[in-house]
Length: 439
Ligand code: EPZ
Image (cartoon, rainbow, N blue to C red):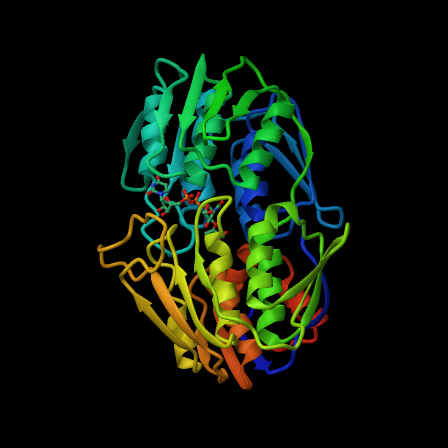
């Protein structure tokens, strides 16, 4: 694919687009299919790169994976699960973070797992220490090699009692995908409870698992001997929906996001309203629009669910460059998620980043040299610029900035955006954006 997009901004984005299933759920449900002894069906699956990567990894382990793009339906045949060659797995190294979640299912099905070096966005160190500790707690033996991690379970996997140092989404999913077939009971405290995790629990329950979630972030799992396949329709991608909503706000536009769902977006909707954006919720989706009034500044902290998602932060910051006054944002999930503001500053935005915690939430990054708070002063007109996509959400935010700016910007590295935004070029066209791929 061509990798440089010319974006001529200054025109409001108006029209309708559709969001399908959540990237951060679909990829995990695909891993869950590996645990089933009969075939599974997953619906509302978007055509994005992360889905391709997980499908390829499943195929390497003998799973038959078919995708019907129009219906967004994935089917999985798990009757011939087998070990993959390390060399083949290695070819997928660096392309995603999902492979780490194959540990539990592969240990249950094959007795061992090899996990290649992980990929994913560079928005912080993104260690996997919680994952490896929990696997050891289950009784796994973890052997780190130069190219990846080799994991075995010579004495089987046994239920465990553990507390996460932080409610990590991935480590909670690791625990679920391992505990469902471990022998005995597992209790995980300080677990993450994002809607995508609850949807994964729904899938596992359909497969035969016994899982309960308490209001105090404790998840209990009673291991079972076997799991069957499942049929499930994914919840909508609330990160993609919020990205288009922020694009409507920043460009002064009006976008109907078909498929967007209110329950998983309530915190975002509150912030959108406080900033001055308006929305109409229907059974089919949510219309997000700029009512034409001045936008208001806001004080915002990102947090685990039910807080304001870190993945909503970057597109919202672009909209806040158009609000009248000082906005303060405290990023408490990732230590390094303001790198994308450097390009916005070059485009004329007034954004300062600080090491201090500019917020009331207890945060792991204070006094540790991480620029994890930002002050945005607006409104500032944005000018066109040459920009390089730094990561998935940062890249989409750069696109929004280019669409807001007067003049023609060049956005380099746009292929990365395919990792999480289905048909984004087609959608930009449908919204009247003036964009053109460079030869
Ligand atoms: C998931 O990442 C999502 N990715 C991220 O979406 C999302 O930003 C994040 O959850 C938070 O909601 C997928 O679902 C594929 P974490 P994950 O474990 O599971 C620290 C996007 O753009 N940590 O909840 O990797 C970690 O460094 C992406 O769609 C450890 O210290 O996130 C971070 O500071 C980007 N040790 C915090 O916990 C560990 O072993 C939260 O990370 C694991 C995590």
